[in-house]
Each structure stands twice: as structure tokens, then as C-alpha cells.
Length: 143
Image (cartoon, rainbow, N blue to C red; front, top):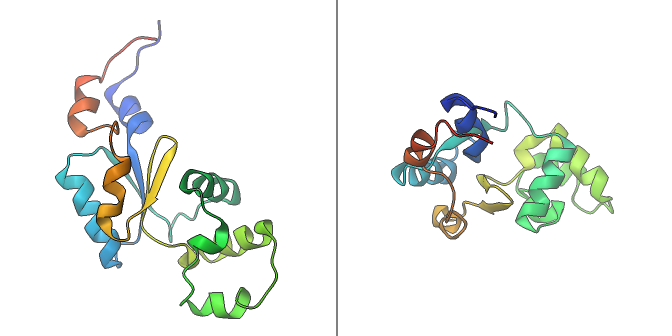
């Protein structure tokens, strides 16, 4: 028998949001999740950039390619990506080194992910995602 504490369950079952606090769409998406009492782990991805492996997994969940997830208006995009014939690995490396290129916010629940542009775009993938109440109710269980 393995027992889990409330904190362990919260970590295992929360929805992740790759968040930039200065972005209005990211703030609005976070507020939308909070209004629905979704259990959230906030990842400020400019402070804690995803690794290439994590970014690759995010792209798989989003069913996107690296170029689809890039913010094309950023100077670094124009300087390092635009007009270049780059491999997937090279694009991932550029995104890891320059996380400002990653579109935001990204919301992840299990094997599903969505970009909150507009914020309501994440709603369709939230079915079955844990709420704060669910995490509290199921805070101790056995395997």
C-alpha cells in the first residue's frame, strides 16, 4: 500500500499553465482557470524555460510543429529564424535559449494541451481536469 499526501496529489494532478504575467492573454487564461477552480501549477516559462525534451512533448500534445508555436513578431525570430532552413532540433534549441519566442499561454492537462488565444480556447480540453475540490477530496488514496 502506498499513501499519498495532499501536497503529493496536488503536484501529480494539477493543470499546468506556461504563463507570462505581463501578457494580458496569459493573465486572462489564468483567471479563467481560477474561476473554474481548476487545480493549477503556474510555470513562469521566461524564468523557468522548458528543456528541448519538455518543449518537444508540449508540441506533441498541441499537435504542432515548432514554427507553429513561435512568436513571429519577436526580434529574435527575425534575427535567428526568419528566412532560415532550420531543423526541428535547431528550432527547439533556439526556443529553449530564447523562451520569449514561445507562444503563450499554454495550458496542459494530462496528454492534452491548448494555447489560450483566445483564453476560451482552453475550455474544450479541460473536461476531466482536476479541480481544487477534487484534489482536496482525493487527498489520500491507496495504490
